[in-house]
Length: 291
Image 1 (tube, helix red, strand yellow):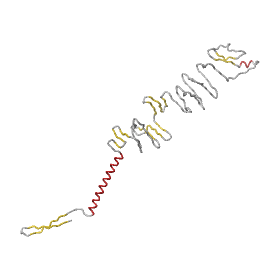
Image 2 (cartoon, helix red, strand yellow):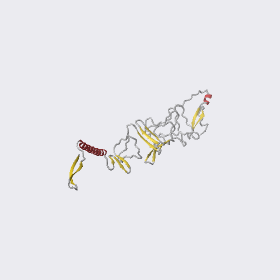
Image 3 (cartoon, rainbow, N blue to C red):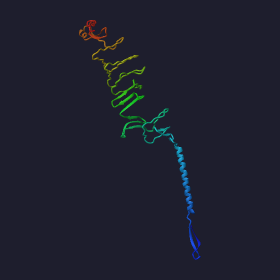
Image 4 (cartoon, rainbow, N blue to C red):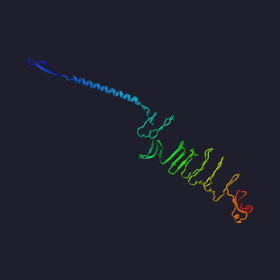
């Protein structure tokens, strides 16, 4: 809006001369003013809503000076309380639980732990699935208190570090190849059975093989022959009695002297040594003193 005012002045001749003065007043009026107020009110509403949402998010996420909710950030790393779900891989140098609780890692599919080198290559992995557990690495070690090995396995073989390996299954243990151990012992009041269903069974030791049954019998069964062979020693049967109940009994006629010469008798020395002697009408053991 422009307003024009006229003022009168006196010149040198004394006559009044009109002087025009223009005053310009600039402003926003009408619908423009109402739109401006409405826009300012809308900005204030948005500011209040944003502030309320920010406060609500801070309250819901439990933001504080130590971290966010159950997740606390300290100089040693991150500390997480309660149960948490990870949608993507988790990279960490060490994961520990509280002293009064256990560490539980579970998944609907499988849980995989990978160890990588400086180049990012996987050097060891353990995968726990719904049906099986798989793992690979250069060696596998189970220790007790970090100083006593319980089990160790690598490309060269497996070692049981504890003094006893106990198999409690009803079918026992199955070995496809040789087993090297200083002692094979059954559980108390149970039988010990060594069996090879389709192949041979061999027990070798440089200083001897001892088979003991302290409260029962020791049975050796074979479909064909049982051979007891000593290369440079004796075969000693130390017992209260030695019985051969199923030996065949030979029959020879009284007039067949040739058949008698093909018959032998077993002689026993006082030391327990056994030898055979050609049978005669009477015993011939005393004639041959091979003791």
